[in-house]
Length: 397
Image 1 (cartoon, helix red, strand yellow):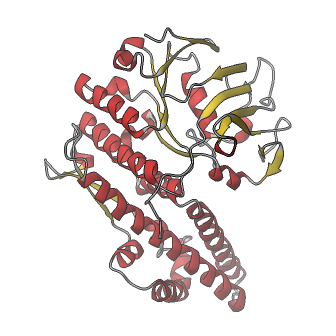
Image 2 (cartoon, one colour):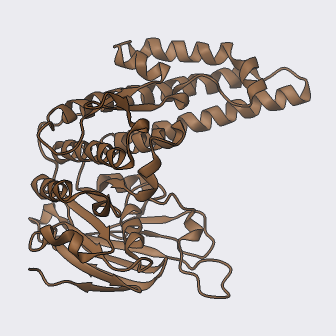
Image 3 (cartoon, one colour):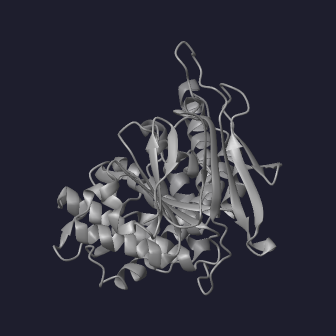
């Protein structure tokens, strides 16, 4: 059960420093806790800064890029350099005046594992969830409703993880168990021998436990988001009806006991061994589910709506999650990342987006090529001009 009865302590970012990160040799940005809009020409490095912030959370960031590709690379260099992202947060334990330092990066070129440090101590990347939770929207997600279900699952699972950090661990355990199960099945098939039944059964039990945990968390999130959307009828964004089409998520939504679902999924995996070995993949489980979004006013699937309508539906969904995060006990310092979102909105919706960000009181980073896009934010947010790796604070008026 996720409690949302009180606000978690906030630790807003006060300074962001990147070294040998993408196009930046070194850059540092002082922040005052308000929303930040980054403007400048294409290729100046605006999205790179958003990616840097996104790597202050577990995972591979908003670009989902291999870590070795992130380091700055000069002409003639075959491998990107070791890179780092460091941030200073307010520390509520010090009455808001203390510093809490976090950082991540590669300690050597070509490394496949990143190092994470909190207050100078090396910790697992999952510990970053104790400090920051992120929700982002990028141009690559503009086709979310038109692409395959795997992209929508990944998008929705990030929303789940922002409130329930254990979701990522369950997903990793589930995927690893399915991979190992498939390896055993295919090796036994190719060798013409019987599979190791005991080990296979153990993997299927592990997949069932973690897979049902995934389904239950997704079910809780879809209910919470739909409830949040119902309370947003006064916003100038289209209302969405959300649903999860996966068999296991549907059973979780129906109120089926978790133990019953685990037993059912384990049996489905046992029964499907021969079929899955032939197909080369598991044909039953929560990895096959999908997020469905319906434009309520037009009574049509999001995929059949215009590009602008799809963008507005997606933005309303992300804002609903942001509103939920703003009250969630389990979500310290939620941060919103909006890459090139303002340019795709009309003036009314753009102003509504800015008003909502301010009302939520969450730290947000937005990018755009034209400073005029953010005119309604003047005096309410921190403007930063980005040009060829140079960061200049704009006049605050």
